[in-house]
Image (cartoon, rainbow, N blue to C red; front, side, top):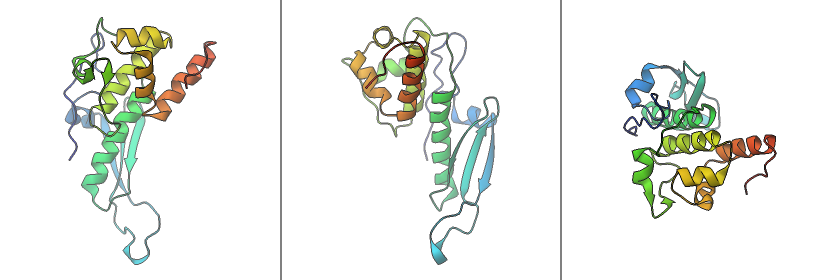
Length: 179
């Protein structure tokens, strides 16, 4: 089972929902068990093992139905919810320094984390919040996060929807898109 990261308060007085403890996050959510259609013939999933988790304060959700075990689908849906929260929910006031989680994951200016790691959604939320705070200026954002611009872009590329969001906002601001 996937465990959530420790609550990280990297923003002034608040914690991004992608970073809070699993049990606290689930208290703010509605969980539905669903049956999804798909191939499989006689071995097709005939019970409600699919899971949809909806974060009530933001109306952002995550879902999974590809496994036959409800517990595995629940873990995947929770992870997807955290990633969706990281992408779609912004907190614009940031602290003076990056979070302890970010600092622990940084090694000689390189952020070491897989896009499937439990820490990934919290780190993605922090990166996107920093880039938003610094008005989509990657150089200033990377200086704040103590990594190079290329490392920050490489990290953002691990979640294409996050990079697409930044590029859309950069274009709206008259800046070129990131490659």
